[in-house]
Image (cartoon, rainbow, N blue to C red; front, side, top):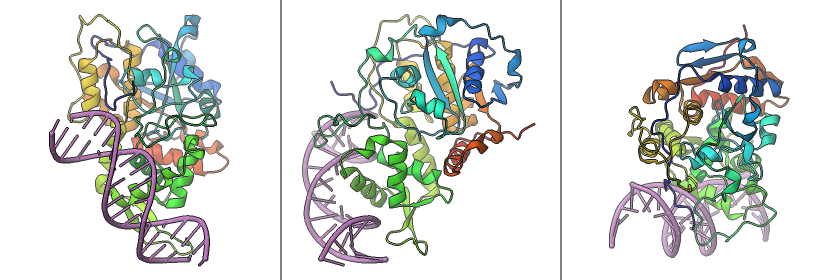
Length: 355
DNA sequence: GGGACTATAAACATTG
DNA sequence: TCAATGTTTATAGTCC
Protein backbone atom coordinates (compact mmCIF):
# COMPACT_ATOMS: atom_id res chain seq x y z
CA UNK A 1 0.00 0.00 0.00
CA UNK A 2 1.31 3.38 -0.86
CA UNK A 3 2.55 5.45 2.01
CA UNK A 4 0.27 8.08 3.26
CA UNK A 5 1.87 11.37 3.82
CA UNK A 6 1.91 12.14 7.45
CA UNK A 7 0.78 8.69 8.26
CA UNK A 8 2.13 7.79 11.57
CA UNK A 9 2.71 4.33 12.42
CA UNK A 10 4.16 4.24 15.68
CA UNK A 11 7.02 5.50 17.32
CA UNK A 12 6.94 6.42 20.56
CA UNK A 13 8.93 7.79 22.94
CA UNK A 14 6.96 6.63 25.80
CA UNK A 15 9.37 5.98 28.54
CA UNK A 16 12.32 6.77 26.41
CA UNK A 17 14.34 8.76 28.85
CA UNK A 18 18.02 9.15 28.46
CA UNK A 19 20.30 9.13 31.39
CA UNK A 20 22.63 12.03 31.77
CA UNK A 21 25.05 12.70 30.39
CA UNK A 22 25.00 11.40 26.88
CA UNK A 23 25.90 7.73 26.98
CA UNK A 24 29.63 7.30 26.74
CA UNK A 25 29.16 4.73 24.06
CA UNK A 26 27.42 7.30 21.97
CA UNK A 27 30.13 9.88 22.57
CA UNK A 28 32.79 7.33 21.69
CA UNK A 29 31.05 6.53 18.48
CA UNK A 30 30.62 10.14 17.56
CA UNK A 31 34.26 10.90 18.20
CA UNK A 32 35.40 7.72 16.48
CA UNK A 33 33.49 8.43 13.37
CA UNK A 34 34.55 12.01 13.12
CA UNK A 35 38.15 10.96 13.60
CA UNK A 36 37.86 8.24 11.01
CA UNK A 37 36.70 10.74 8.47
CA UNK A 38 39.88 12.69 8.92
CA UNK A 39 38.16 15.46 10.74
CA UNK A 40 38.00 16.36 14.33
CA UNK A 41 35.24 17.00 16.73
CA UNK A 42 36.35 19.92 18.81
CA UNK A 43 33.50 20.40 21.11
CA UNK A 44 30.37 18.63 22.11
CA UNK A 45 27.81 20.13 24.38
CA UNK A 46 25.40 17.86 26.15
CA UNK A 47 22.84 19.50 28.33
CA UNK A 48 25.20 22.32 29.00
CA UNK A 49 28.12 20.10 29.75
CA UNK A 50 30.99 20.67 27.36
CA UNK A 51 33.07 17.74 26.28
CA UNK A 52 36.18 18.83 24.50
CA UNK A 53 38.65 16.10 25.24
CA UNK A 54 37.68 13.02 23.38
CA UNK A 55 40.88 11.26 24.24
CA UNK A 56 39.46 10.70 27.65
CA UNK A 57 36.63 8.72 26.28
CA UNK A 58 37.17 5.09 26.83
CA UNK A 59 37.41 3.43 23.51
CA UNK A 60 36.72 -0.02 24.71
CA UNK A 61 34.54 -0.98 21.88
CA UNK A 62 31.62 -3.14 22.40
CA UNK A 63 31.41 -4.64 19.02
CA UNK A 64 28.10 -6.04 19.79
CA UNK A 65 27.55 -2.83 17.99
CA UNK A 66 28.12 -4.72 14.83
CA UNK A 67 24.46 -5.26 14.94
CA UNK A 68 23.73 -1.67 15.48
CA UNK A 69 22.26 0.61 12.98
CA UNK A 70 23.89 3.86 12.25
CA UNK A 71 22.22 7.16 12.14
CA UNK A 72 23.96 10.12 10.75
CA UNK A 73 23.15 13.57 11.90
CA UNK A 74 24.64 16.40 9.97
CA UNK A 75 25.26 19.66 11.68
CA UNK A 76 23.63 22.45 9.87
CA UNK A 77 22.19 20.20 7.35
CA UNK A 78 18.67 21.13 6.75
CA UNK A 79 18.18 18.35 4.38
CA UNK A 80 20.53 19.18 1.59
CA UNK A 81 21.70 15.68 1.39
CA UNK A 82 21.56 13.24 -1.38
CA UNK A 83 19.15 10.47 -0.90
CA UNK A 84 20.53 7.28 0.38
CA UNK A 85 21.05 4.27 -1.67
CA UNK A 86 18.71 1.91 -0.12
CA UNK A 87 21.17 -0.84 -0.32
CA UNK A 88 23.20 0.90 2.27
CA UNK A 89 20.86 1.02 5.14
CA UNK A 90 23.55 0.93 7.71
CA UNK A 91 24.23 4.55 7.18
CA UNK A 92 20.77 5.68 6.49
CA UNK A 93 18.52 7.63 8.74
CA UNK A 94 15.61 5.68 7.44
CA UNK A 95 15.38 3.85 10.71
CA UNK A 96 14.69 7.17 12.34
CA UNK A 97 12.23 8.07 9.70
CA UNK A 98 10.57 4.80 10.26
CA UNK A 99 10.50 5.59 13.88
CA UNK A 100 8.77 8.72 12.78
CA UNK A 101 11.11 10.81 14.81
CA UNK A 102 12.78 12.26 11.79
CA UNK A 103 12.06 12.42 8.22
CA UNK A 104 13.79 13.16 5.07
CA UNK A 105 17.41 12.77 5.95
CA UNK A 106 19.31 10.02 4.31
CA UNK A 107 22.96 9.49 3.73
CA UNK A 108 24.93 6.90 1.98
CA UNK A 109 28.09 5.50 3.38
CA UNK A 110 30.02 7.23 0.66
CA UNK A 111 28.41 10.47 1.65
CA UNK A 112 29.78 10.05 5.10
CA UNK A 113 33.23 9.24 3.95
CA UNK A 114 33.24 11.83 1.28
CA UNK A 115 32.06 14.53 3.60
CA UNK A 116 32.11 17.09 0.87
CA UNK A 117 28.54 18.13 0.91
CA UNK A 118 28.34 19.12 4.47
CA UNK A 119 30.55 20.68 7.01
CA UNK A 120 30.30 18.29 9.86
CA UNK A 121 28.81 14.99 10.61
CA UNK A 122 28.10 12.92 13.59
CA UNK A 123 27.37 9.27 13.72
CA UNK A 124 25.13 7.89 16.34
CA UNK A 125 24.75 4.17 16.57
CA UNK A 126 21.78 2.72 18.22
CA UNK A 127 20.83 -0.79 18.96
CA UNK A 128 18.08 -2.11 16.79
CA UNK A 129 16.20 -3.34 19.72
CA UNK A 130 12.93 -1.96 18.60
CA UNK A 131 12.70 -1.66 14.89
CA UNK A 132 13.61 -4.35 12.46
CA UNK A 133 16.57 -3.53 10.28
CA UNK A 134 15.59 -1.05 7.62
CA UNK A 135 16.78 -3.44 5.00
CA UNK A 136 13.97 -5.74 5.95
CA UNK A 137 11.50 -3.12 5.08
CA UNK A 138 10.64 -1.83 1.70
CA UNK A 139 11.60 1.80 1.42
CA UNK A 140 8.49 3.68 0.68
CA UNK A 141 8.61 6.46 -1.84
CA UNK A 142 6.77 9.65 -1.19
CA UNK A 143 3.28 9.78 -2.44
CA UNK A 144 3.20 9.57 -6.15
CA UNK A 145 0.43 11.13 -8.12
CA UNK A 146 -1.24 8.91 -10.61
CA UNK A 147 0.37 10.74 -13.47
CA UNK A 148 3.83 9.94 -12.29
CA UNK A 149 5.61 6.97 -13.73
CA UNK A 150 4.51 3.87 -11.86
CA UNK A 151 8.06 3.04 -11.04
CA UNK A 152 11.33 4.78 -11.62
CA UNK A 153 13.49 3.44 -14.39
CA UNK A 154 16.16 1.04 -13.33
CA UNK A 155 18.76 3.61 -14.15
CA UNK A 156 17.64 5.65 -11.18
CA UNK A 157 19.88 4.44 -8.43
CA UNK A 158 18.64 7.11 -6.08
CA UNK A 159 15.17 7.38 -4.77
CA UNK A 160 13.13 10.47 -5.01
CA UNK A 161 13.98 12.74 -2.12
CA UNK A 162 11.25 13.06 0.46
CA UNK A 163 11.16 16.81 0.11
CA UNK A 164 8.62 18.94 -1.60
CA UNK A 165 9.81 21.09 -4.45
CA UNK A 166 9.42 24.14 -2.29
CA UNK A 167 11.83 22.64 0.21
CA UNK A 168 14.29 21.73 -2.50
CA UNK A 169 14.15 25.22 -3.92
CA UNK A 170 14.49 26.69 -0.48
CA UNK A 171 17.57 24.61 0.24
CA UNK A 172 19.13 25.54 -3.05
CA UNK A 173 18.58 29.24 -2.55
CA UNK A 174 19.69 29.21 1.05
CA UNK A 175 22.83 27.40 0.07
CA UNK A 176 23.77 30.09 -2.38
CA UNK A 177 26.20 32.70 -1.10
CA UNK A 178 23.97 35.50 -2.26
CA UNK A 179 20.79 33.75 -1.13
CA UNK A 180 19.56 34.13 -4.68
CA UNK A 181 19.74 31.86 -7.67
CA UNK A 182 18.53 31.80 -11.23
CA UNK A 183 16.31 28.93 -12.16
CA UNK A 184 19.10 27.19 -13.97
CA UNK A 185 21.24 27.15 -10.86
CA UNK A 186 18.36 25.85 -8.82
CA UNK A 187 18.09 22.98 -11.26
CA UNK A 188 21.78 22.37 -11.00
CA UNK A 189 21.77 22.40 -7.23
CA UNK A 190 18.92 19.94 -7.05
CA UNK A 191 20.54 17.58 -9.51
CA UNK A 192 23.87 17.86 -7.76
CA UNK A 193 22.47 17.02 -4.38
CA UNK A 194 19.68 14.71 -5.40
CA UNK A 195 20.93 12.55 -8.27
CA UNK A 196 17.47 11.12 -8.65
CA UNK A 197 16.65 14.15 -10.76
CA UNK A 198 19.50 13.47 -13.09
CA UNK A 199 17.42 10.81 -14.72
CA UNK A 200 13.99 11.91 -13.65
CA UNK A 201 11.49 12.88 -16.30
CA UNK A 202 11.96 16.47 -17.37
CA UNK A 203 8.66 17.48 -15.89
CA UNK A 204 10.33 18.17 -12.59
CA UNK A 205 11.85 21.35 -13.97
CA UNK A 206 8.43 22.50 -14.90
CA UNK A 207 7.38 21.76 -11.36
CA UNK A 208 10.26 23.83 -10.03
CA UNK A 209 9.28 26.78 -12.17
CA UNK A 210 5.67 26.30 -11.31
CA UNK A 211 6.60 26.30 -7.65
CA UNK A 212 8.69 29.42 -7.96
CA UNK A 213 5.89 31.27 -9.66
CA UNK A 214 3.10 30.08 -7.48
CA UNK A 215 4.68 29.81 -4.07
CA UNK A 216 4.56 33.11 -2.28
CA UNK A 217 7.63 32.12 -0.33
CA UNK A 218 9.75 32.81 -3.38
CA UNK A 219 10.32 36.15 -4.94
CA UNK A 220 11.78 37.09 -8.23
CA UNK A 221 14.31 39.86 -8.15
CA UNK A 222 15.85 41.90 -10.89
CA UNK A 223 18.18 39.96 -13.04
CA UNK A 224 21.83 40.59 -12.48
CA UNK A 225 23.74 42.10 -15.36
CA UNK A 226 25.21 39.40 -17.48
CA UNK A 227 22.90 36.81 -16.10
CA UNK A 228 21.23 36.40 -19.42
CA UNK A 229 17.73 35.12 -19.57
CA UNK A 230 15.72 34.83 -16.44
CA UNK A 231 15.76 36.36 -13.03
CA UNK A 232 17.19 35.65 -9.66
CA UNK A 233 14.92 33.97 -7.18
CA UNK A 234 15.07 34.57 -3.46
CA UNK A 235 13.28 33.39 -0.37
CA UNK A 236 10.91 35.84 1.18
CA UNK A 237 12.28 36.40 4.69
CA UNK A 238 8.76 36.55 6.03
CA UNK A 239 8.12 33.03 4.87
CA UNK A 240 11.50 31.62 5.71
CA UNK A 241 10.41 30.20 9.03
CA UNK A 242 7.45 28.47 7.49
CA UNK A 243 9.74 26.88 4.96
CA UNK A 244 12.01 25.76 7.74
CA UNK A 245 9.12 24.19 9.52
CA UNK A 246 8.06 22.54 6.32
CA UNK A 247 11.05 20.29 6.69
CA UNK A 248 9.34 18.74 9.62
CA UNK A 249 6.28 17.99 7.58
CA UNK A 250 7.88 15.94 4.92
CA UNK A 251 6.40 12.63 4.03
CA UNK A 252 7.29 9.85 6.34
CA UNK A 253 7.47 6.25 5.25
CA UNK A 254 4.97 4.01 6.91
CA UNK A 255 6.22 1.89 9.70
CA UNK A 256 5.43 -1.62 10.57
CA UNK A 257 4.05 -1.19 13.99
CA UNK A 258 5.00 -3.76 16.49
CA UNK A 259 3.43 -4.46 19.77
CA UNK A 260 5.48 -2.77 22.38
CA UNK A 261 5.35 -2.14 26.01
CA UNK A 262 3.55 1.11 26.51
CA UNK A 263 3.53 1.07 30.21
CA UNK A 264 5.76 4.07 30.48
CA UNK A 265 5.14 7.49 29.17
CA UNK A 266 6.98 10.62 28.29
CA UNK A 267 6.01 13.60 30.33
CA UNK A 268 8.01 16.16 28.42
CA UNK A 269 6.92 16.26 24.86
CA UNK A 270 7.80 18.82 22.25
CA UNK A 271 5.58 21.81 21.96
CA UNK A 272 2.79 20.60 19.69
CA UNK A 273 2.46 24.09 18.34
CA UNK A 274 5.99 24.03 17.12
CA UNK A 275 6.31 20.39 16.28
CA UNK A 276 2.87 18.95 15.78
CA UNK A 277 4.11 15.89 13.99
CA UNK A 278 6.89 15.06 16.38
CA UNK A 279 4.74 15.73 19.38
CA UNK A 280 2.02 13.51 18.10
CA UNK A 281 4.39 10.80 17.16
CA UNK A 282 5.93 10.83 20.55
CA UNK A 283 2.54 10.85 22.14
CA UNK A 284 0.85 8.31 19.95
CA UNK A 285 3.51 5.91 19.15
CA UNK A 286 3.43 2.47 20.47
CA UNK A 287 7.02 1.38 20.29
CA UNK A 288 9.28 3.58 22.35
CA UNK A 289 12.65 4.34 20.94
CA UNK A 290 15.62 3.91 23.10
CA UNK A 291 17.47 6.76 24.67
CA UNK A 292 19.98 6.76 21.86
CA UNK A 293 17.29 7.10 19.31
CA UNK A 294 15.77 9.94 21.22
CA UNK A 295 19.09 11.64 21.47
CA UNK A 296 19.79 11.16 17.82
CA UNK A 297 16.45 12.61 16.96
CA UNK A 298 17.05 15.54 19.28
CA UNK A 299 20.42 16.10 17.72
CA UNK A 300 19.02 16.34 14.26
CA UNK A 301 16.23 18.55 15.47
CA UNK A 302 18.77 20.87 17.00
CA UNK A 303 20.70 20.93 13.81
CA UNK A 304 17.62 21.47 11.82
CA UNK A 305 15.93 24.14 13.84
CA UNK A 306 18.69 25.46 15.97
CA UNK A 307 19.71 24.69 19.51
CA UNK A 308 16.85 26.68 20.97
CA UNK A 309 14.44 24.05 19.83
CA UNK A 310 15.75 21.74 22.50
CA UNK A 311 13.99 23.87 25.05
CA UNK A 312 10.90 22.17 23.78
CA UNK A 313 12.35 18.77 24.43
CA UNK A 314 13.11 16.91 27.60
CA UNK A 315 16.34 18.15 29.15
CA UNK A 316 17.93 14.82 28.49
CA UNK A 317 17.63 15.46 24.83
CA UNK A 318 19.76 18.57 24.87
CA UNK A 319 22.53 17.96 22.50
CA UNK A 320 24.42 20.48 20.52
CA UNK A 321 27.20 19.63 18.22
CA UNK A 322 29.75 22.19 17.31
CA UNK A 323 32.75 21.88 15.19
CA UNK A 324 35.84 23.79 14.46
CA UNK A 325 35.49 26.03 11.47
CA UNK A 326 39.03 25.17 10.50
CA UNK A 327 37.85 21.80 9.34
CA UNK A 328 35.91 23.38 6.55
CA UNK A 329 38.98 24.63 4.83
CA UNK A 330 39.66 21.33 3.23
CA UNK A 331 37.13 21.99 0.56
CA UNK A 332 38.85 22.52 -2.71
CA UNK A 333 36.06 24.31 -4.40
CA UNK A 334 34.47 26.55 -1.92
CA UNK A 335 30.97 26.21 -3.05
CA UNK A 336 30.47 23.23 -0.84
CA UNK A 337 32.07 25.08 2.01
CA UNK A 338 29.78 28.01 1.49
CA UNK A 339 26.88 25.63 1.26
CA UNK A 340 27.91 24.05 4.50
CA UNK A 341 28.40 27.38 6.17
CA UNK A 342 25.06 28.61 4.96
CA UNK A 343 23.35 25.54 6.25
CA UNK A 344 25.22 25.68 9.52
CA UNK A 345 24.03 29.21 9.84
CA UNK A 346 20.59 28.12 8.88
CA UNK A 347 20.57 25.62 11.69
CA UNK A 348 21.96 28.09 14.14
CA UNK A 349 25.04 25.99 14.71
CA UNK A 350 28.06 28.20 15.03
CA UNK A 351 31.48 26.75 14.43
CA UNK A 352 33.95 27.41 17.18
CA UNK A 353 37.20 29.07 16.44
CA UNK A 354 40.21 26.83 16.75
CA UNK A 355 41.77 26.94 20.14
C1' DG B 1 -16.95 15.90 2.17
C1' DG B 2 -14.27 19.89 1.65
C1' DG B 3 -10.27 22.83 1.98
C1' DA B 4 -5.37 23.08 1.80
C1' DC B 5 -1.29 21.52 0.00
C1' DT B 6 1.43 19.33 -3.37
C1' DA B 7 2.85 17.16 -7.79
C1' DT B 8 2.35 16.87 -12.54
C1' DA B 9 1.15 18.25 -17.11
C1' DA B 10 0.16 21.43 -20.51
C1' DA B 11 -0.55 25.71 -22.92
C1' DC B 12 0.95 30.06 -23.71
C1' DA B 13 3.70 34.39 -23.36
C1' DT B 14 8.07 36.54 -22.82
C1' DT B 15 12.90 37.02 -23.37
C1' DG B 16 17.73 36.63 -24.93
C1' DT C 1 13.73 30.71 -34.91
C1' DC C 2 14.71 28.43 -30.83
C1' DA C 3 15.34 27.35 -26.20
C1' DA C 4 14.94 28.90 -21.62
C1' DT C 5 12.15 31.13 -18.53
C1' DG C 6 7.84 32.55 -16.35
C1' DT C 7 2.73 32.40 -15.75
C1' DT C 8 -1.54 30.29 -15.58
C1' DT C 9 -4.86 26.62 -15.58
C1' DA C 10 -6.28 21.99 -14.86
C1' DT C 11 -6.22 17.58 -12.69
C1' DA C 12 -5.34 14.37 -9.15
C1' DG C 13 -3.50 12.39 -4.65
C1' DT C 14 -3.10 13.04 0.15
C1' DC C 15 -3.75 15.02 4.65
C1' DC C 16 -6.36 17.31 8.14
